[in-house]
Image 1 (cartoon, rainbow, N blue to C red):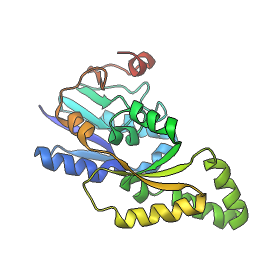
Image 2 (image 1 turned 180 degrees about the horizontal axis):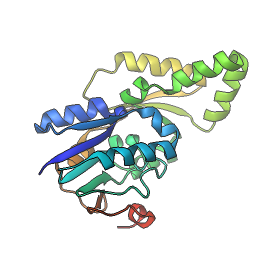
Image 3 (image 1 turned 60 degrees about the vertical axis):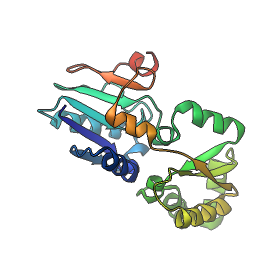
Length: 220
C-alpha cells in the first residue's frame, strides 16, 4: 500500500528507529515541534501538507490530537490514520490512560528526547523568560506555571542512552523545585501506527474525501 507519513519532529528519533526495525521507508513530512504552541497554526500546516499529497492510498499521521488541531482536517483521495492520543507523550507512554494514571498519583511534567531538542522546549522558554524579565521575576513566573507539578519525568524508550539527557533534566528540575525521574516508555504504539492493525479504540481512520468531526475524536 503506497503511503506517506506526516510526523512531528518531536518523534523523529523514535519514528526513524521504528521505520528501520520494520524495514519501512515511506516518504516522511516533518513538521517543527514549535507549532504545538499554537493549535490553529498547527492545523493550517497539517492541512497544507495533506492538500499536497497525491497518488497515495494511505497517509499516517505521527501526531496526537494536540489541542484539537486535527479537528476539521480534510482528506484527499487516501485514507488517513492517526493515533487516539492527546499528544506525543501519550503515544510513547502507550495511551492517554497511562499518562492520566501517572499524573493522578504524582503530577508530572513529561519530557522526551524530542521535546528536549525542540526549538521551544521548557529550558529554552525558561532562559528566554529570565532574560526578558530578570532572574527573580522569571523564576516566579515559572514556579507559578509549574507549581502544580511535583515531578519532571524523562521518558525512556530504551533506544538511546539517557545520561546527558538526565543531567539536563536534573538541572531543570532543581531550577523548578521538581523531582527528576525516569519514566518507562516504548515505541510499541508507534510501531503499530505504522504497521497495523488499527483497532478503533486506539486509532482514528478517516476515509478518503472526508472531514474529521468532533465526534470522530471522542467516540468509537
